[in-house]
Length: 449
Image (cartoon, rainbow, N blue to C red; front, top):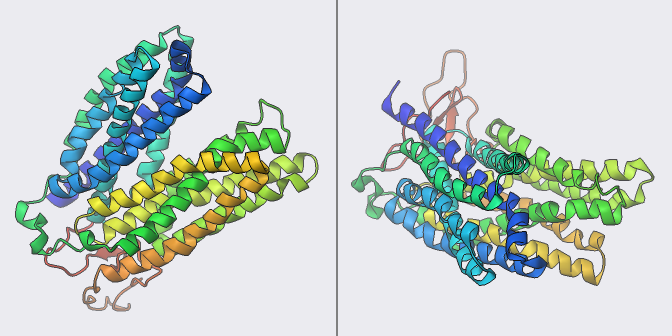
């Protein structure tokens, strides 16, 4: 086994660790919010302000983290940001008042944002080394980490643990857990290989128009996802008039479908290609929201079945949006930090603005009318994402010369087309093995499990 293959496999395990721990931190934080609210007597308005400050801090730090990744490498950013994102949980955990919490919430959000960019940038580097889709499973692991954080909090509280000191313990332990994961990451490339004048600048030359198109797809996907997270259970309770105990299952249906597809989505994208995958993602999500919108017209139990089927379809579609977009940015080659940070910031804005916008529209009219917004944006995912990925495919450069024909076969089996390459980067395949684009620095042989 060559060193490149060993590095790729080790790094893949390390990135899994980063995504799981990042999800764990968010799960612990979210599960600890009720106790934090009780301790500081926050109330809905102040708690909402705290969440907004966290999101604002994360959004600002993402824009700063992109250039840091390009300058220092995603590995170095991960080494610092990962442990720091766990350590800054101490701030909210020990905040003595609302005003102290407000300041420390910004710091906590900044730690989360830098980690988000660092680990996602490294994930696209690892996928590029592998030569086939692997990013989707990372995001599924993030969801598993969040579920683990919530479950761990629930078990600890049932055992009589102090919720404040549970967060303190997490802030001390989680940074230590990041260290073994960070040790597995890809080594930094030699200085001459990463120099802008040595042929590695294609990824950093993405124009603002292309970044905006990718960002629009990310914004639409994140807002549609946020709508399901925040409003699925309320739609079941307010519109379908389900039992209070059953209403949360609407979101659970969405979440389970999304996590499952993220964990299993890489082979799907490998088979269909990035363009077709994001087209189907928009189609499934749009159909899912359509079912949710028509569900009140059904009778009896069919109302709930129709709505929950819709939320499941929406989860299936939206699960692949972020992995496909991030992979497309990485497949363009070169430095990805700035472009990835901008696309992520667009998407995060959708999560940030979506719940508030839908709330205002629902207040002025009704929740079903408000849900027309994510239904339309789910279609925008395909309408903006597909042409953006095609443009990245063209940007990635010409395909290499084909290999001689295998005995009894064609010269290139399964040669890539615009709709067909596993990574959407213009690579071709010979007997299923990806060939790197022609540039000044040949890429390593793709790893195989």
